[in-house]
Length: 353
Image (cartoon, rainbow, N blue to C red):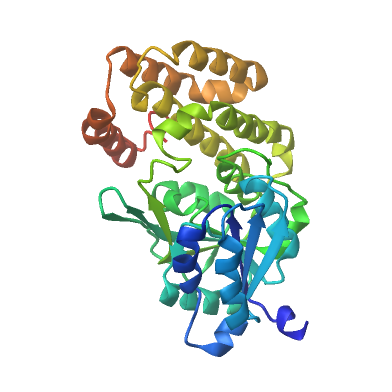
């Protein structure tokens, strides 16, 4: 119990049928500094896995019983596993890492030293993606002139273009006491609730630290992943469920600190931009989702006239691109680059962000 009270960082690893990845991921949490290892807690949340993930994890528990712990639960999905993990963390801070991803061990140690010394509600941090289909590593870095201070949410929103990568599932670390004080539970039984995780709690944060040190390695390029186009199109109800869960929070916007409303608004706009991108651009059948997208957008208008006013031009823009049969390659190499230029140079947000 004494050791648990001294934990600096808890890592929550939602685990379902991830045995082939788990050994690599868990091994990256092993540091040479034994004292630092004792201040780390790695919670492998077994979400009713059907493979031998538990056996793989148990080897780490046996070797490092002060650091690794298995929590068994019935299958409830990614959000459910995170909710269970949060209930069990004993660290000052916690971070979620998917079972098929990993961390840079040196960056983990550097990050923990900052977490040990400082107090804030959330850490926004650089990460890196690795596309296994292309063997391509891409940094998702935040850029800030001064990372040695605490920022408020208004300041964070004002520097959005420089740090937006870090305001994601892979970039955010939360103060455990802050997160638990919100009493917030993620939606369960669906995919893509990571968008909710990096939106609602973050919109309440009053003290935020920035760190340009790539910690998380996000693995991409697997057709079986929930982020593959095939999976995304088959899970549109999941996108929708998460969207309306986030929209439901509009009634609480007055409770947010300054900057919270804008963060919430931008996050929803980006989320819908990703959804329209899937429906209209990535989808090889250009006509198949037009009716669905229109009906969904009208439901958004009914639910939140405010959000509709923010995204209607984005919707119309994607419809136009779809009618011109814009394909993914052209969008990524030409059109998206142009919009990114406009966004960054002329501060035009609504076209793209």
